[in-house]
Amino acid sequence: MVIGMPGQRKRKRQQQARHQQAVALPEGHWQGIFETQDYEEWRGWLREHLAEYAVTDRAHLRMDTLCGRLVQPTTYRMSLFVPRHASGGVA
Image (tube, one colour):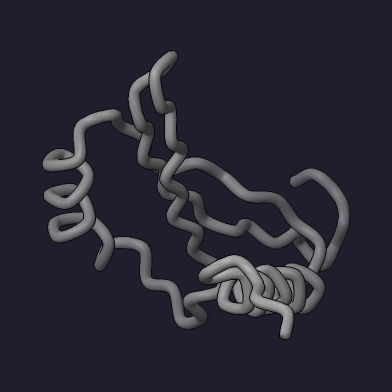
């Protein structure tokens, strides 16, 4: 009987789901819209400002928690996916 690491199946499913979402997005880039190292400031910003970014598809929002451990403090970041314009040119 082989026993795997706890949570390994869940992590693999989450990785596969993120990969499928990334493949489904059109060409474009992720633009950071907010970043902080204070968790309370992070939660407050989400409550107050998230409605401003009227996103119809949750796949276009990315919330990252960058764990700093001993060397750096934890950083919380919100990014918004900005698709490339269909015209392809610069206005």
